[in-house]
Length: 229
Image 1 (tube, rainbow, N blue to C red):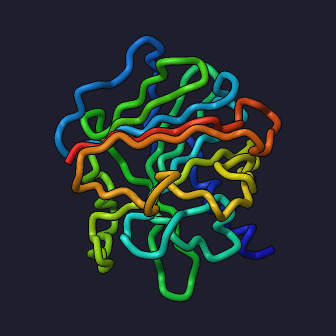
Image 2 (cartoon, rainbow, N blue to C red; image 1 turned 180 degrees about the vertical axis):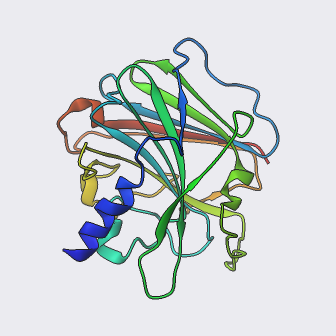
């Protein structure tokens, strides 16, 4: 119960206040021509996005070890949580926050806001049910220095998508288990994890049999990552 409370407190750090940036969605253009060192992440839902009642979370593990970060991270002390990009808002405009999970000895990781400029991160909404975040990977240097990855491939990142409701409880995540799923991997085929020292375009779409959730604005049906070395 305590760990679940910590999760609520953790996600509650995504209060879209002065520490985040407010942006007006660009509903007509899609970013293209990524500069070297940038990553672009797409998030697609079954129905139009609801920035008032749903939070859209892209979670990263940048340590090169461990594995996928899952929506039920409160069950295992937020294992594999390094950084999150969270999109919410008030219905008329969206706000994007970048969160670093700062590890402290003996305690759950502390979510800390990372301030960014418009040169470091851009948000667009090319369709009612899709948004795109394009960002400089150096943004994940964080506000607190991150340890040098020690795995066999220091450029290996793990990434996942999930949604939460207005009380910051998980609603949906990729995989047959929904928000409790611990089987989904990205890319969906091959070895899990993405090598950010390479240029690639990896994507996935929901398959038949995945749980349906309510509201459908929180139902995740696809994701994509484009990266430039």
